Image (cartoon, rainbow over all chains, first blue to last red; front, side, top):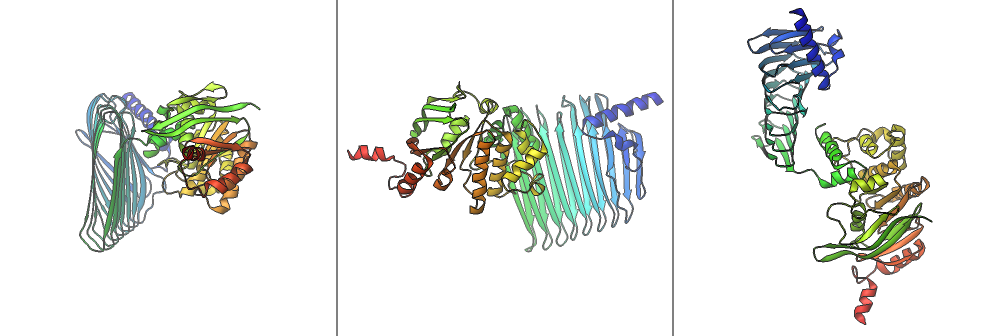
Amino acid sequence: MATKIIDEYAEMMKAYEQSGGNVGEFSNPNVPSIVISGNKVLGKNEVKGLIIEPTPTKDGVDVKITVKKGTKILYPMALCFGVLPKEGVQIINMEAYIEDEAGMNAVSHCVFPNAEHIVHKMNYKVHLGNHSFFRYKEIHFHGDKGGVEVVPYTEGEVGENSYFESTFTLKEGRVGKLDIKYDVDVKKGGKLELYSKVWAKGDDEVNIEEKGNLKGEEAKALIKSRVVLQDKSHSKVLSVVNAYAPYSRGHVDCMEVVQDESVAEAVPIVGVSNSLAKVTHEAAIGSLDSKEIETLEARGLTEEEAIKAVVSGLLK
Amino acid sequence: MEEILKVVDLYLKKGNKEIIKNFNITVERGSISVVLGVNGAGKSSLAYVLMGLSGYKPDKGKIFFKGIDITDKTVTERAKLGMTLAWQTPASFEGLTVRDYIQIGMKNKSVALVKEALEKVALDPILYLNRTVDKSLSGGERKRIELAAVYAMHPELVILDEPDSGIDILSLEKIKKLIVDFKETGSTVLLITHRDEVAEIADTAFLMCSGEIINQGSPAEISNFFKDECNHCDHKGVPEKVVQENVK
């Protein structure tokens, strides 16, 4: 049994590395971390002021993370979630409490290297106190078969003068089915930034719904999506910013690049219910700019290399 | 002197309009040749045809680079042979840093060379290396980065399409110096411009009007002709010989 756990841990680390992670983080006592394979917690490291409370369930793990009041976590927390078999379900219910005047950065790698039919659901609840910050990056690695259904839902509340940034990146391997939802309220002086960067191939399906609610005076939100589609992939991006309070400011910026027989749809919705608030939006759907491609070809890149360079930049 | 570029009887049509016609030039290796012409003369189209951009395949004629017929070669093939183009209005690239952008065309990806190239165009590497080549740059900044990128490539032939447009007067001297530096570091320059004061740094000058070369000579001769005749031309877009032929 112990050997099996060690092998599973080693395989998770291998996939973590393939997705761009540094496995050394999991042996550094100063770096807070957690490793979850399926519904097993394979490793966990807490640091002063940070409490990680995982509870295994039938299909996954419930995790409560608390950053205590006044604590700023020095090193970004490393999270590794995944499913190693070809088939399976993983449901992670995570609650993050960043208390007043506290802050943390976290990078989560979600790895499904052998996926043929995997469902990964992440229900995230984020509570930021006042004068606090939380930067969360989620990076996915799916292998090349496209058999993953990823459903990350995030609900959150950004306290007064606090900052929440969330970045979802899926550009290595196939997407499969992706259904992202964000719904975040921002209080007085708070700031929300949501970034989604996805490269869809084959018959991948991408659905992104991002919603920022500016409920406090001078609250700010930026919602930025970049989706690159090729082959027969589909995407739909719905970005919503509602400004309810005076001097609140929001901006939606969505760009979808279609290639081959792919299909994209973008729906920016901006709502203002206070005469002193302002929300702007921009959305662009189209093919890659031929001038960009030819510029790089004139530097000696092949068309394929030029497309990769332009797309990598867009998703950076 | 060795010919590096030879254009023979080139024609390009867009719809029913002949953009380039009866076009013949020879550029010698190691020289700076200037193609001077008013706006709309077909200068940028010439640059695009020479580089092989999509939509700019000549209807007739041949282009030879280092003696090789490149008329049907792709942009990449031409670049790999040793030629490149600096666009008049360069493209923006979201997410690509100035350093990455300049390094793309370099054989030796040394950061020291990237810094040197930026200094050549009067941009402080400390401020610009990690900036993104996107719309946050002004037109002038983007243009200088374009020139730095082609300089760092050390191409055998560089086509500079209006490198002086959108550049302030104080920086113009630096751009002229950079063009001379191209030559001194072994590149041949085909300079395309509508500013006669820039032509003085060239070895040979061609005057382009309505898609064809109507005069050729020393930069001083061609600049004077351009100043006297073209800047105040009352038959823009129609070469004088055509006017004269019609009068006859």
